[in-house]
Image (cartoon, rainbow, N blue to C red; front, side, top):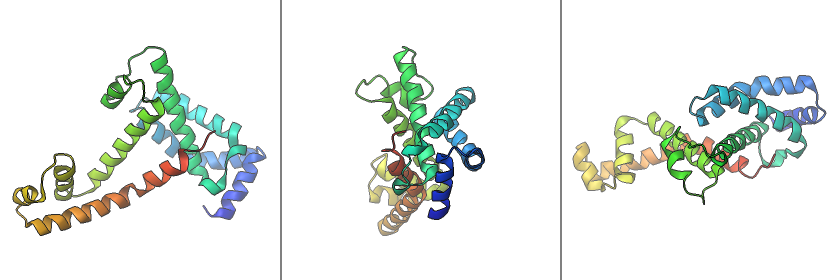
Length: 197
């Protein structure tokens, strides 16, 4: 969406124009719901509630949106992310054990980690896993071998049947591909983390 189109839409949204809200909803609702359901690991019932809360929060706080800080879409995703974090915080405060995901179960016990951070960690982990899945098997294996299992370039070269120089080149291309695949996520995270609906 161009800057002019976004400014025009945001002006209409601030005027509480129903058609403008319908257009924004139609454009982003499916992606926002998919994002929420992903963070909730497929809990669509809770996802529907949080999705509704997200749009109500957006409607109620549209005057706080600052287009200089990013796109409307990123702002709405930021609201959704915080609503999911609030959901986990409520569950934790109610004394329910969060066992939907191993990461949550491990980190929620650490009182110094807030649910926002837990959701962020899960989201980052899922984004990295998705990017790794996009790499070829050899590049993925090389990255995991080097950075997860701590293998040396020489060990990887033996394992892959390549020269150390070829493995260094493979790692370099794989890292660059990961940067490209994850840029959307980290740009979006940077734009949304300071937005306070």
